[in-house]
Length: 272
Image 1 (cartoon, rainbow, N blue to C red):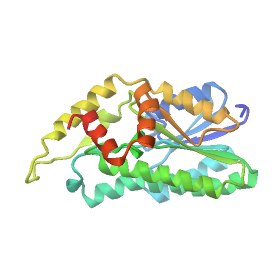
Image 2 (cartoon, rainbow, N blue to C red; image 1 turned 135 degrees about the vertical axis):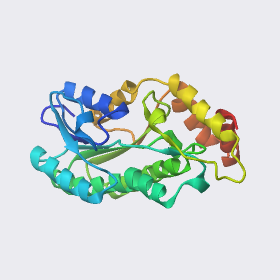
Image 3 (cartoon, rainbow, N blue to C red; image 1 turned 60 degrees about the vertical axis):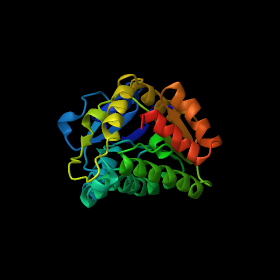
Image 4 (cartoon, rainbow, N blue to C red; image 1 turned 60 degrees about the horizontal axis):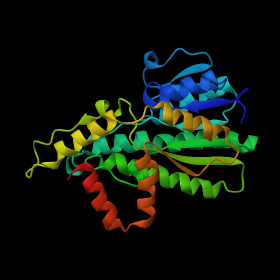
């Protein structure tokens, strides 16, 4: 897919994988409409068009996507990238936090898919790249709702591919492992002082994630993968990006091992 006149809609463009993707794509000549809740956080780049959008607010999604679509005329590519999580035991995650995470990571992307598909169908082509996570296959302890939302978006991607099988619209589930971004630093830790039985493993898991993130590859790795997905005339349906263990050995384990063995491996990985 050559870059000339290609219009891309990208959520979460102010940091991490999103901002690196915006930089790489705009430098290649793609026109990128990138979102953030705060316009001040978006980069000033040639071919980049800042969009204010709160993915936890359906009105914000609909109104601001309509403005971007009016400016762009059409979008060949939708990249659902924005994400955030809360670190804490499942039992202390409030209804409000659960709703917020599912709105941001499932309902928001789904609404954008509904908004972009009619004009993709009209043009008889398009790409949808849903950035989920390896957590969709390997749930992260104390990031239960986050892992659940990524599994939901991954399953939605698979279902969408079946529905679009007779079209030229391609859907890819991109599953990053550990990538060196500010995601962990920005993850809010919940107060677990009310737990009757303290979760002694919580600190171990937190510091394991911290250590793994510090040694992780840069977000450029994921951004380059997104570029290749856009350029590939027949992109893969699912693609993992990260270090060798996460992208080669872990998916093999998921395919061949029993659920009990996978759970044991996850516990060993996080030291619990």
